[in-house]
Image (tube, rainbow over all chains, first blue to last red; front, top):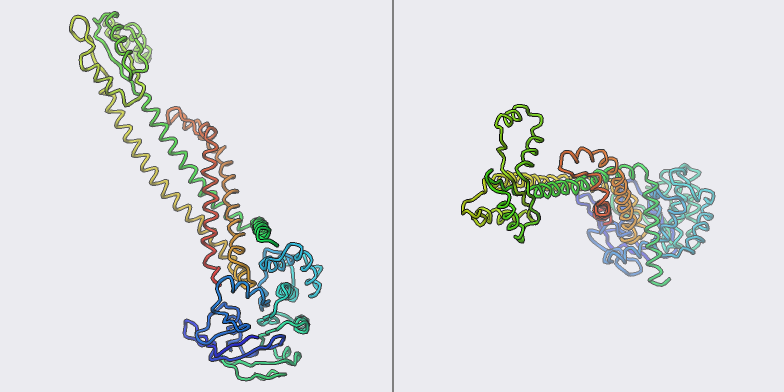
Length: 226
Length: 313
């Protein structure tokens, strides 16, 4: 279970990104965080990944305050979380295979596991023919599928997707959402930040709406209103 | 996997990633290696220049000797007596006797192109030169005591009168000391300049590597976010830095071959008997280790320092 407990974040330039946000996310839940740009969606995710520290309040994962963890514990925690970004953030000098293998190597997995799991996860996102290509040789949709494969390969407890479809056309957007749904059906918590109305209506899952750093609505099977 | 197995697996992965990154990042690699080469060239040339100055100083010291010129009336017997006495001194390495006739023919040979001197000599009718004893000491610092011994009047002829006309050590000594001082200050200036250029070129190399890592900052943050450990992120960059150093070092050493060969004849004429090419060949291992160790050190340290900033995510 993930708990944001009265979390505030004020950046050094005094801009308030989050204001006393309280939110809890159950295991295996699929939650969409919606809201206009600057609503605080990305800050919320960054706080969860310990990329940023809260100005006030605390973020708990399985009752542990994430921001009290040391370097090694943070690394270990992040290996339980898969991440997908709007701009894909693949490693440009590594092939598709190596991009995914890197995540497994970081988690100290053996060479044998890597050799068997990487092709498997690529099959899952339908990208087997591109296994030896470099990211620059892929389309946007393909890159995002590699990113999802990378996020999945360590069998994380949670997948965080920050505007994963922001750079994709409708067909690819649909594909990515279906993949995320499938991942969730297999028992992984999915946190999706987006401002794509179509996705939300398609999903029919819990929707948390944010505005100017606050949670303004929390719907169990929500629709996109903001 | 056991800890030991894991360590080797990680080590192998870091090496492999480092090699791949070096190879795949063509332009960045080329630029970094070239800049590093300039740095290593400077460092290499510094070791050459100090060798040149040291050798010149040593050669110069070798050129010091003492010529004892006798009055023309001194008998050969007396001179050989003195030669014998000097030879018995522990400081003395070698004493060469040059008779009056030999001195004359040497003088003529030296001035063979100067007709006025030769004709003046002819006009004189007799040999104006005295016999000479040329003395070489075992060590340049011992000339002073040898010269003092000769001055002190221990070597008088049987008649109680000195037969020594003059001893040239004291005149030469001033010139030699002065030259030695010039060389020493040139050496000091050289070292200061060398350190200055070395520092600048090391900074340039450092900054180039910093730029390459700056280019990879997004990658580094992604690695951080997938939970890679500090060592695992830093390792390949350090490996790349080391490869830059080794490759640039080898290319520099290779470049020194034609460079010193080309400079060889010039240096031989300019610095008494010092051929930079043969010096390079003779001291290859020494220079190669200086250049390679500097390269590896600069490469690894620059990478390790530059990446720290981006690891804070």
